[in-house]
Structure formats: structure tokens, C-alpha cells
Length: 303
Image (cartoon, rainbow, N blue to C red):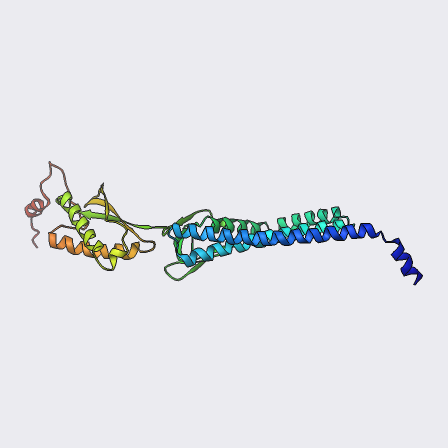
């Protein structure tokens, strides 16, 4: 009993009450900061979703991408907040936090060296999602490999190519990324016709086929505008090449392009426009007789 009385008498009640009030104040401020962070994150979510919809992004995909980003931000901010609160409270009760900070710095340095590739992948994935460089369902070429994007995580991007092969790329190792279906897509057409054809007439037929497809109930909804004919692009060995482009909704360029080629072939057949096949003419020079003449003058061997 005497020991307890001595302990109670030795307690500095004024200091204890002051520290307790400070701790309560710190907890109250942290609690208010938590609500402020949640409100700010909700507001940020609404702004990002609205911007995604204004950019033509699918609402479900926009919400999924924004929720992933906001969740990561919220977790990071909350962890940092409560670590600071814990350190301040320890200091208020008389615990020296300098060794703790030094130990945390050494531990963080060791973890950083051991998991630097993981950290690089996560940071790269964060900016990949934040900047909306690629989404699930896009057709993209990553490091030279093309396919449909099946997953976009903070650590990896997952593609499935036309053969069904799944390719997994760590985000930190992505050196080149080409998105073929962002906002709109294009189908580039190199159309070869015979040298004897009237090119203005050929281009008129190409525009007519495009106009027919724009009036189609199904394909018209997939095309953003009429065909863009850039003009004569090359004089090939057997054909004059006309370059054009069909502008479509994302990932619809191949469906529209194949149908356009089918209809264009039928229109060329009706108009009598020749799509040439490769052929070569052999020329022996002016001093030489034609090849058939040389064959006819060659003596016939008799036995």
C-alpha cells in the first residue's frame, strides 16, 4: 500500500493531464482529417468520372479505373496520417522517437533495395492508370506484342493475342505502348488499281461505297465520318496505289474495313475497274528480235 501511495504522490498530475488533453486534441484533429480526406476523395472520384465520360469513356470502365486510383490514394494518405499521429502521441508520453525514425529509415532503405522492381512496377502502373493510357477491352501493342487488354493492374498489364496466348508485362518493363482503340480507330486502305484506269473515277466509286455504308443501318452507326481519300500514294510494279482511311468507333475498324473491301470489290466489278495481279513484261532490247520470232526461226531438229 505504501508503494502505491508513493507512486501516486510521485506522479506529476499537471503534466499527465496536459499530455492527456494534447493526445485527445491530436486524436480529434486526426479524426477530423480522416473525414476531410474521405470527402476530398469522393469529390475527386466524381470529377474524374465526369472527365472520363466527357472524353467518351464507357461509364463502367471509367468508374472502375477511378475507384482503383482513389482507393490507392486513400490508403496511402490514411497510412501516412496515422503513422504521424502515432509518432506524435509517443512523443507526448515521453518516448524518444528519434531511434524509431532512424530504424524506420534503415528498414525502408533495405526494403527499397530488395523490392525496387516491385516498387517501380507499382509506380509505373499508378501513372498508367492515372493517365488512362490503356483500358480493359482496348487493342494495344505492348513492347511489340499486340492483343486485347484483359487486365490493367498496378503491377502488370495482361494481353491476349489473336491466337489466345496470354502475355503478361510488368508495368516497369513497358518501354513502348501503342493503343489502337483509344477514342476512335482508323482502318488504313491501300487500294491498287490498273494503270489504265481513270483515277478520278476510281475515287468516286470508293466514295460511293463509303456513302452506302454510312446509310446502312448497322455499319453506319460504327463509322464516324465518310472515307478519307488521301490520293495516289505509290506507283507499284503492277498497280497505282490509292491510300484512304475509314474512321470508326473504337475497335470497330476491322469489322468496317472488311465489309468495305467486300463491297468495294463488287462495285469495281460492276464498274469494270481492274484490280491487277502481279505481272512482268520481259524486254530483250531493240537489237533483238521478239522471243516468238526467234522460236519460229529456230531449225527443227530431225532424227
